[in-house]
Image 1: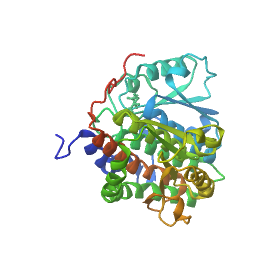
Image 2: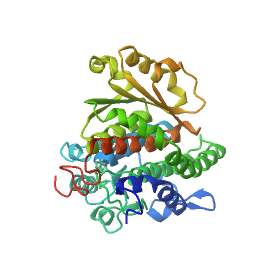
Image 3: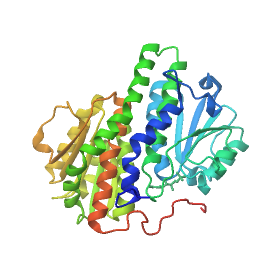
Image 4: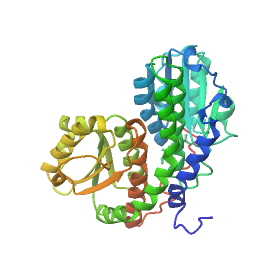
Length: 365
Ligand code: F6R
């Protein structure tokens, strides 16, 4: 069942190109995005004045990414929150709210409770879930199935990628509905989306040896930091979570601009800092933060697109991503981040598919 892979996690990392393709094909009709099978109206954006995205863990990170893009392009207010907070704080929800819950298992107790709360207050609920028969799928008004296929490893990989891709589909479908966004831009976004699976496939094959070499050096570190701005910050959150849950090394993600408000105090000789710089529009800002940590002795790993210009002396390790529009390029970084977590944990000798204290489906709060 592991098909020659040492762990389910590695198998699932390598399945991502296929599972992503499946989700995209399922929601494309003659080259156009069509989400009506989910129950969404063709002009759904007109029906809502705000969006709430609620989830836990990795699923929450996909929502954090979506907030940046949906607000930027669609100009609709978006809140994103972890379900365990949302459900106990009396959020402002009404019939104009589109509630998007995200859950691989479809059974996460806090997410289900948040869904019920929002529904009671009149929201329309759209679920992004990998499980057709789940409580979350059943109780939602509309459902986009993630089609990632069964995920066995506790650490989520291919479901995350499809969660982000489902938000990309919503984004582009929303852009189509906005009069100020031309059909040509929407068509370009659609064709960029279709390029993602092949780019992911190549990256999973190409980056392995380089990442193994970096991971050899990470196994005996105490702290590892991940920095990024905008959507890259949310990839940093996911990269840090993946690393700590399977390697048990302390990892933290920061918005790169926040470093000088405290965290820089923790950067000393040899501390690894992973800088995510997929967004060409704000790369120079990210790079100046990378220089600051390098000046304090950090061992830096930069993940950025392949034509990016920068001063190489500040970069100890470099992973290059293929060039893609800035709103989608960030997702490509998930491949090196997942592999980094995997190979670091392998070096640490941990039980990768079944990390201590964690369950695949969290059905109690
Ligand atoms: C991390 C991980 C967890 C889950 C979280 C939500 O790798 O797997 O953080 O993402 O427990 O689970 P679902 O998506 O099933 O609601």
